[in-house]
Amino acid sequence: MSWEHFVYFAISAVLLWLVGAWAAWKNKAGLAYTTTALGLLVFFSFILSMWISLERPPLRTMGETRLWYSFFLPLAGIIVYSRWRYKWILSFSTLLAVVFICVNLFKPEIHDKTLMPALQSPWFAPHVIVYMFAYAVLGAAAVMALFLLFRKKPVTSSEMEITDNLVYVGLAFMTFGMLFGALWAKEAWGHYWSWDPKETWAAITWLAYLVYIHYRQVPHHRQRLALWTIIISFVLLQMCWWGINYLPSAQGSSVHTYNS
Image (cartoon, rainbow, N blue to C red; front, top):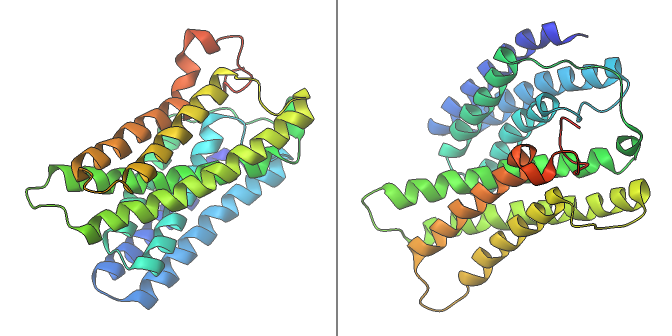
């Protein structure tokens, strides 16, 4: 399987996800589950074929991580939908997945079989995969927070519970991702944590979401301030994910930059 075949898998998966999103709005849960799952199966089959052809997990370049993000967005969407029946979540997850798919279609990157020794650790794949799922769920939390901030109606407690649940799930997976990353670092470089620029921003992002969780427990807290905390945390997450590549402090010194 080569990168040129991606467009066929992508279009097929997106069409199935769109049907799933429509079915969710029409309260046709069975159809939503079926088509979304089929779309995930189609998309993952391409990831798996790339894994086989590259003879390594497709997790090295930004293009490859966008593949996983495009996969995990609908997966997170269907999980959240099945748990809380939020009709909008499948539409959101499909829209964001389409954005990342389009980036990969219009800006393809070279995918080769080479993999630096540090990335050959068995902890590398679970570290990145778990993080991508966390990013997808926290992205949903950020969209929900923006919606609640800029609409005219007052925010209700049940609506705040939506953001709470999304942040709880996202932060839990982010924590597992950091633990897997520490085990990977120990095996690859001999230490669990070195305050590499990427690790520093990861810690800042993790603490930001922890601040949100604790602030929500404060009696008589301000809901809008809590929602803004989610937005700020998601901005920090973007810096941790790809913004780090453009920081002068990371150039030539960070082992996590994708162009290194």
